[in-house]
Length: 253
Image (tube, rainbow, N blue to C red; front, side):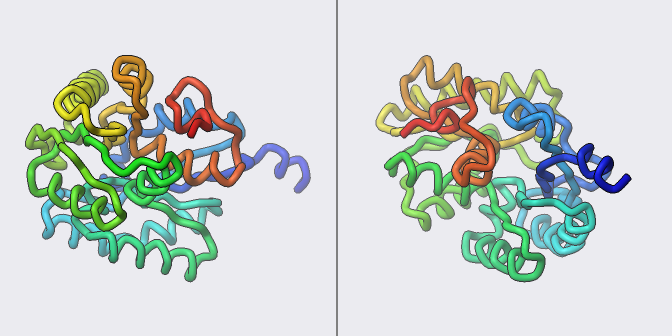
């Protein structure tokens, strides 16, 4: 019986700590992720309960981090993603790296965060200058610029739409996709000196924009998810390169 049950279980359990409350985790993220993963992989999500991207909102939500980690450990996940680029940016890079380090030390499970995955992808491709298609407000944008600067990346330009967490969470799937395409194209057009385009935000259905941006502007484009899947699954050989979702995931350099 044990062997039979074991054969039916997922080969890999991809744990995700999402910004939202546990009962409100984004379905948009799952919809995009399953386009990249093999059929025997499963996403297991939990939520921080974030109310806003302000420093106060992030500090309140981060108190739930270890509860989220414990939930994922209880589900026997193989890897943990601390999702949400704005949260990482507001926390600062030093704190994110320390959290990821502590997670590995306490649980034995590897952990990653979106901006760290992006930095790894850019280094792999030998890129140092990017434009960011952001839908957030100046405070979040400035924090993202600083985070990436500390990782050796120059943000030559960043769009803004003055969204805060509640605005992002309220978007429909269609609105999210339209927003991602709009800010991605704006970033690429406005700052042609950028070597690549980053379009963060899992709730925005941004993964689907990558092929369009790369085809139109002839340069690599990334989302949180594409960078995370490359850094955590493709790069270490857990899954093969994924075709159709951009140069990075296809294994290009």
